[in-house]
Length: 340
Ligand SMILES: C[S@@+](CC[C@H](N)C(=O)[O-])C[C@H]1O[C@@H](n2cnc3c(N)ncnc32)[C@H](O)[C@@H]1O
Image (cartoon, rainbow, N blue to C red; front, side, top):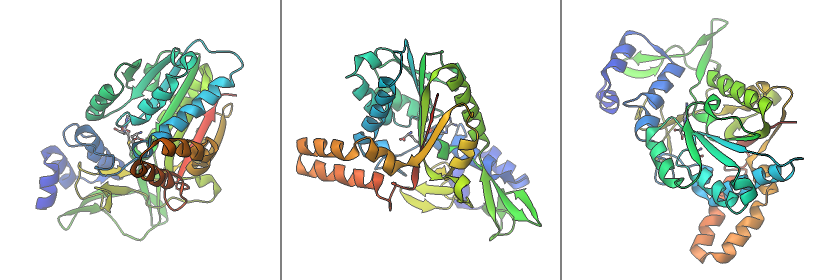
């Protein structure tokens, strides 16, 4: 067993398991992210500028503020005022997006006073951070969408949640798609089988969440907003090997730093869209177009006018990253699903 691996994972059952039988890619990712003792999200998920990677809400408050405006616009267009609103966030991370949205909602008591927030978060470490950041707001942590109480209007939001879910990969060998496996090759953890063969992916958890979202939006008015990096595979993009490992903002091998680095995949928006119940309306756009339409430039100008020059410069840099086609602007997509 290579020392590097033993040192980084330190979990006998897993090593024994791997040395006796290979794991599928999904099983490997589940272990690396969710193992109760060693999983990245269970112990030390570190994101933000000082961590392994950063997300849009961690870059600037404007991201959450504009998402709040999207929800307020929807609310304003409702033909009859709602009696209750559930706002459900999947994978709220450090709670920053929700905190920024709630700050805006508090200025609209007709919205805020009807609100119950539900957070679905697997990481005990992140739950603690969320608890501190969102203290004083009507927030409850639940395990699944089905655990939330019925509401007249429901909003579901997920930023960089679907990319964190474990994927299965398949390799084209001997005229068949075969499940890709992970095991030991010459004493090192690696993918088994031939390299340089076509690869595709599937994410069984997409179905679980999409069925729950469909169900909820069939019994309540409302909308879901899902933001992630990935492509609309229905219009010609084909996903090969999109499994990505990031450690301290640098791409690494999935087999380095196990439990100490993030693993994610490019979201297959075609697969997500195909799961949406046909009675619901869907719209897919780029993060760039979505944020610009919500008034990103105007909000940036207003904030910069009040900020000292170094803060204004930092804001402009963060906003440029969110919308530049060479950065997150077109890589990230926004899928909205709305009741008719
Ligand atoms: C990439 S982070 C994004 C965090 C946050 N949405 C943001 O934009 O900063 C993924 C989040 O999803 C959570 N997560 C990952 N897998 C999960 C699962 N199966 N169930 C619930 N939460 C999960 C992680 O703990 C983390 O909070």
